[in-house]
Length: 290
Image (cartoon, rainbow, N blue to C red; front, top):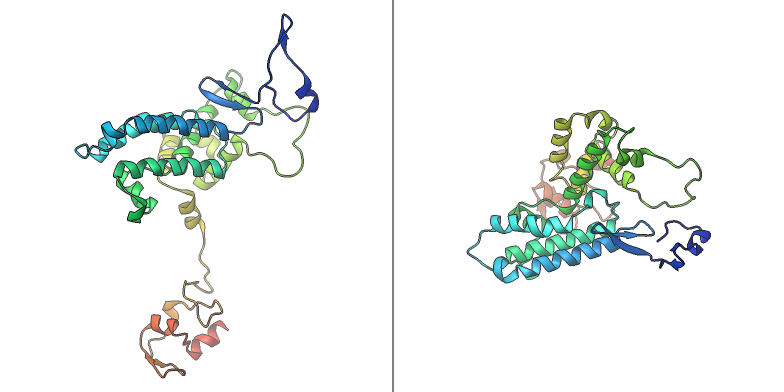
């Protein structure tokens, strides 16, 4: 197998004693699928298939037995299924599609453990809370940050992993346009989401402090991080209600307590939500926001 886009590399062959080796696009090495283009999609599909076989093998003997508690089932799930699924996951340069496949497989397993059908209309957050299981995104972030801190504490003069992490080619450059996501790019995004992008190299030298940071990020998902980083607009508090169909939202704190009469149906509105719902905006509010 060759790695690269050079046409000369595709035509070169390797042989011993006159016998040429077959050139392949992927092969399994030390339990992981290695691809020529550096992607991990095939490895994730293979891991999901192996984990599904392990999960289905315990279907009748464990998952369907009502006398066994959910806590015991989750301990077996983490020890057998999840460990097989996430073997070597700390080095995966995950894409959005790969993360969705892993998250979908985990939710499939958790719903089978809780015996919840799609007809019950139970969302994924409630399922994870009942199982006390963090999201796949949080688990993978924890694995990456733990491994990143371990590599950073290595001696760069002696240890090869740190040399490969910070080493760069002396010749050549990345082509223009969209680049393939590297593992270090995923880690930098994780550090940015955790708020330690500027000080992580010094922080990870303290093993206990870095371990506390990694544990704190287990239950935090990407959506929660974006929700925390989003700053509200001080000038106008945007609400979900729409006034007069033009997208204007009036803060409830600024709505007066006076009663208003609708000019269309002569209905008296005394509550603030009724005022917004019936599209009746006081003149004082109109002058303030228009």
